[in-house]
Image 1: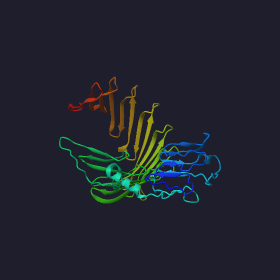
Image 2: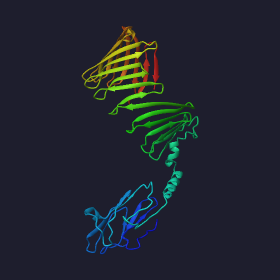
Image 3: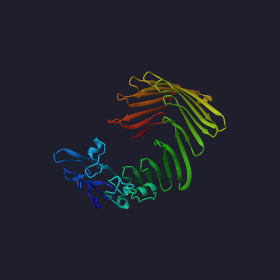
Image 4: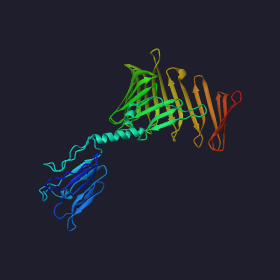
Length: 402
């Protein structure tokens, strides 16, 4: 602890600080007339009383930010005390970077000067980092991807997990390999993922949203491929730009629901999806325009219908190529189990029926093509409801046990 250097003529206050910059106590070295001298610990608070018991001065202190201020200075305009000095305000912050070089209590002359080396705290922290690997921020940030040993054998497989001081997962060491994770020291966000053969880095915007994902190594080969994300004013994703030049654009309605999605390479549209929604937010219509290898486009229009319990009852897909068109119809029992599905397409009609037990567990599933049964599956369960067996009787009997 540094020594107190009182003013040569009538100093009234002394300060003591640790090397870390924490204020330990204040001492009234020569109090005004009628007051008792004493020590005021920085962790607590104390009121200095006058001879008649009235509170003359109050000192307040905290653990991480210590404010030492005469109470009278808060109640009235500054006045000079008996020694002609104005009451002082001293604020000692923590942590101490950059450390305080000099503290002046008197506004015009150096009443108390406390000097301490700024590197005392620095070397103290360095020594702490050397004793606890969780505090080794520099190595963590550098993301060393060296492979540690793994003591797994053919009969015993071990997986190790490592964490930093904030509880973030920093490494998974398994028999299949090692994955390392790096984090931003200020925000705690993931900044990198690496193995012995790969390295990926992440950046974020001012609102902590993912901004870029950059692959710097793949299969042991150095690369530089960046995917970039942008957002609109309310936080919806606006674009995704891939390193191969393909850009995806997103559009939303006034309720921030996706209504349009487009994949574009330069000026060429690769695929476009347009959606319509009902008042409850469910999609009722979609139009897909897909570019084919020969440069032509395939257009698919889909429509969905729901019952009053918002269960899908009808699905229609109409395509510019008739082979892709179909209609699906669904039926439900009184407790919501789907017991029938009928699919109508250019090649015929396929009907699937389901049978359930009293516990609403699927017991049997049968598919028909026209009037011909094409597949039949039976299911068995234990008393806990776990699936025990599945039996396929569509052609030759086959049973799978669990």
